Amino acid sequence: MNRSARLASGLALALALAAPRPSLATSLDEAIARALKTHPDMAEAAADLDLADARLAEARAAGLPQVAVVGQTGHGTSDLGGFFGFGKSTVDPRAVSLEVRQTLFSGGAVLGGMEQARQGRRAAATLSRGQGLKLAARVAQAYGAVLSARDNLAQSATYASATAEIARQAALRFKAGEIPLSELSQAQARQADGAARLAAAQGASADAAADYAAWVGVPPDPLDPLPPPAPLSADLDGLIAAAEQGNPDLAAADARVQAARAGVRVAQAERLPNVALTASVSSARDQFFPGYRADGSMIGVQGRWSLFSSGGTSARISEARAELHKAEAVLARARSDLRTAVIRTWNAARTAAAAERAARDQVTAAESARDSLRHEVRVGQKPILDLLNAERDVLEARAKLSQAAAARTVASYQLAALLGSSNP
Image (cartoon, rainbow, N blue to C red; front, side):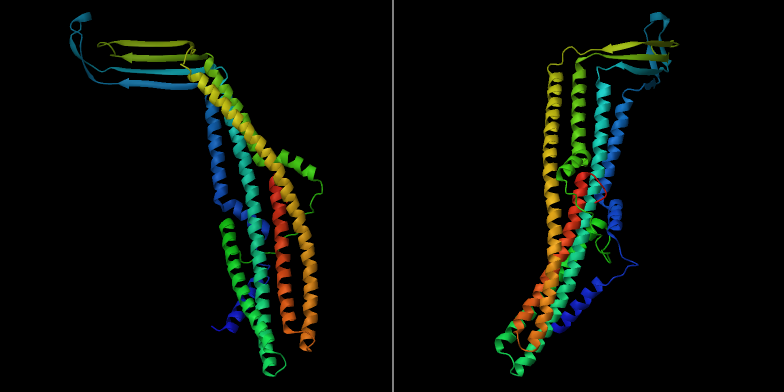
């Protein structure tokens, strides 16, 4: 395939990718919804939440009545040597008992365990919600990258086609003696630059499509334009305060602190007595000698108090306190990191908005300059190189505009994730 054919193929591909197909196009909201249903990160978060639910149910069960049945049976011989008038005989010993136990006092261990599990469940729930918000921001980033890459591909194809046509015309003018060899060489060099830019744009578009498919689960053909981002709040302090109230990662860090405090209470409970109400019924046959029979029932209170554990209890308390100190440090760091992230993302959104406005003005100016130069080059007032430069300026200005629009949308979703909001 010759160069002209490759350029024509690239242009056709770019136009096909850029062509609007509204009846089949996927919106950003639809892409995010699909990712939330299919991405492995959400499945992992759901599994963590199920695990936290199971641990909470287990902790609650520790404070509820426990019922156990114990039984045994067998067959053998017994030889009491004449005691009680029994010699050697065949016996079928069997026994069964039913016991009900209800903890009355555990020194706070049961309540502490329940609080630990409850805070663990809270952490898992907030992290699951936060994972969804982060995934939405990542999908928005991939979505914007695809649109930006496709726009750049279309513009690169146009640039490659324009430089090829200019080079063709330059060759004709050189043959007619209208321009020197240097201008022809410059035109041919830019034609090669156009082909290289088109190849790079094709690769970038393929990479963006692959990244999108990794997040959403399906190829990105075709996509709606990016929705206009919501107005950016000028109240940075208010955004920071809102993030401290709603950020899922910060809430999860706080839940871990509460769970660690409950863990200290659980460890300290080992120094206190444990008291339980018990009731049992039992029945035994042939247990000690042939014909033995015993049935009974009992209700009472059992207690256990560990007075000395060779330092084991103290070590577990120290370990629990260290876990608490670590959780508190993580919470403090998360709060500081959150403030920094909100400031950085807010500034990024402002910068992207300003860059988008500037790029739009730059596109208008670059296109106007190119259109004027076309006429001036045609009548010989300007060299071909000026027109080639103008074509490249238009390409770069449009690429900046597309990238800035995508960056502004991504920043709005990232800021929403930091605030714990699903509405950017």
